[in-house]
Image 1 (cartoon, rainbow, N blue to C red):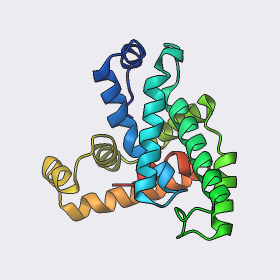
Image 2 (cartoon, helix red, strand yellow):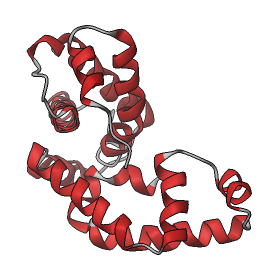
Image 3 (cartoon, rainbow, N blue to C red):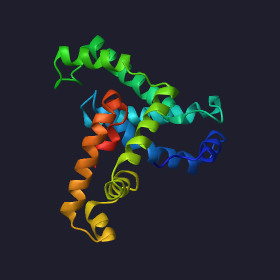
Length: 195
């Protein structure tokens, strides 16, 4: 599973803009899909992701060299979502017009209960590693190329000299297994299920 190096985090804390771009590119799609699952409005989800990264940049001096950026970002994103929902409810805003009052309340409660601690992200990483290790070799290779190297199905098929349909079947098989192993962590691991 691809990860950001500790060196990247250290350089970011010191104010290195290139390291910030690496962190941004790595986490943007993950945070977007997490936020969008609770706030199904494209523009608003994007704004919350941007606010989350703005907070990360402005608070970088408060981070320690061994900080878990993953847990930190998801905690800030979760809190930003909660603020946006509460603010919308207080103002009786139209931002969430597509959600009923009950859906909005349920999303708010679910967000409030999500554990974004460092321990949770270590558990998720371990489950992903164990699940990957349990996949048949061809299935594992295809899934890694798709989800961790962001290759298109056609590229994978050409690289492995198999049909696009075979690639699709292997990805479907892997996703089914991952859904089972990550069922308790789906909001935090949603990025794996988006192609």
